[in-house]
Amino acid sequence: MSDVTVVLMAYGTPRSRDEIEPYYTDIRRGRPPTPELLADLVARYEAIGGLSPLAALTEAQRATLQTELDRRAPGTFDVVLGLKHAHPMIEETGADLVARGVTRAVGLVLAPHFSSYSIGQYLGRLRTAVEPAGCEVHGIESWATNAAYVAFLASEVRRGLAALPAGSRVLFTAHSLPQRIIDAGDPYPTELHATASWVAAAGALAPDAWGIAYQSAGRTPEPWLGPDILTAIDSLAAEGVPGVLVCPCGFVADHLEVLYDLDIEAAQHAARAGIAFARTASMNADPTVLGSLAERIIGLSA
Image 1 (cartoon, helix red, strand yellow):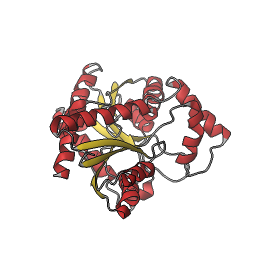
Image 2: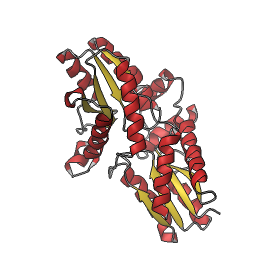
Image 3: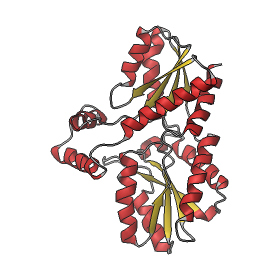
Image 4: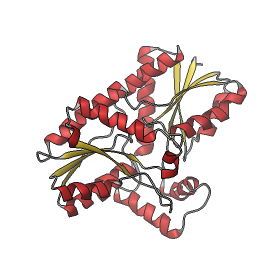
């Protein structure tokens, strides 16, 4: 058995059409979706090819992280998945660690920006599952300014802007959260701004050449963090900005919120507004970024 188990945590996604409804029910905390809500989600999956590629990409990220750890510290780390809304759930993975007698674990969430609503919940669920059995958990709470991730995004921003009209702007995006969480002092917006400002500096963007927007807000009546990406696109069009490059730095893999919410919905919205649209590529299983995270794990475990 390896010395340390790395629990790589992610949101999860359905792997088949039959899993869509139970997945959506889990997201809704056990409340089954209405037929209308379910049909809308199925239609979104159909629009991107039937299902999200996220399950395969998350496994590729796990495998690449394992490879990068093995290159640096052979036989020391075992990387396993723990998912929030699909199997293996974080609690299932935790139960396996306990059954195997694992005493040291590192929790890494496939999201760069800390929020009590996201990374905080993932790490909390892992600790609840394993710490009573004597397994110590070291959590990586943020990698918002990871140098390799910043360099990856800056390269993508330069590439994307080169294909857009001169004077185009960059919008850095992440998943919106309920405003009440931010009002309670959650650092999520600050984390996102840190990533955006570091990437802007690395990409030599002028202060007025970039901004921040949020996307994929939940369908609840309470206020969510904004401005929404569609509203931000309208504002740029109203200013006469000729193009927008969206850099979804809050997402590290291609999935529904990227492939539908941006590549289809936001792109169509920009076209109607008369503004050119492009987005940066997702990190997915980039070995340089995951290698940098591997070094962070090794340092944390020393």
